[in-house]
Image 1 (tube, rainbow, N blue to C red):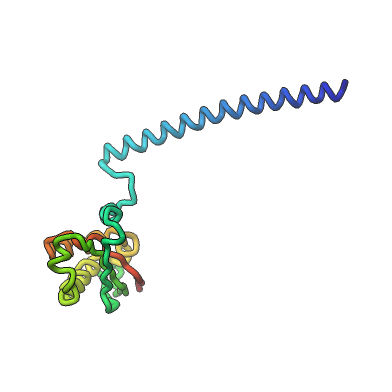
Image 2: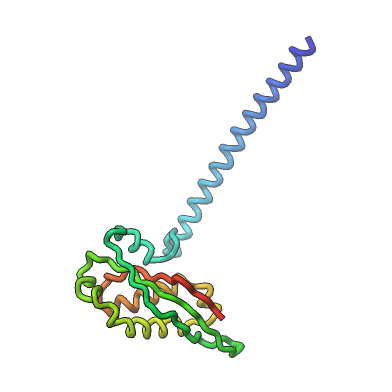
Length: 172
C-alpha cells in the first residue's frame, strides 16, 4: 500500500512539473518574441539593418566563387596613422587582397592589368588608413575596408572589385 501511495505522489509531482514547465515555456517564448519585435521596431526607427554591417559582405556573397579572382598586393604596407590626443606616432602594418568579379565589364577593362595600377591603389589605401587614429582603426576594421572599397570603385569607375580583405594587420 505504501508503494502505491508513493507511486501516486511521484506521478502527481511529475504532472505538476510538466504543467509548470509548459507554462514557463509559453511565458518565455512570448517574452522573447516581444523582445525581438521591439528590437526590430527600434532598428527600423533608426534605419539600421540587422546584419554584420558590411555592404561588401552582401556583394561578396552574390558573386560565385568560380567568378572570383583575388589580387594580392605584394608589398606589406607600413602606414602612419593620424596622431592621437597624446601625440605619440602609431603605425599600421597590413597586407591587402582585392576580390574581383571576373564576369564584370570592369574586370575585362582593368582586371588583367591591375598590377600596373597597383601604385594608385596603394596610394589610395595609404590615404584612407592614414586618416584613422589608432583607436579608430582598431575598432573599425570593417569600416576601413568599406572606405577603401568605395575609393577603389570610384577610382576605376566600376564595381568589379567587390571586396577588400586584410590578410595581415598589426597596429603599433
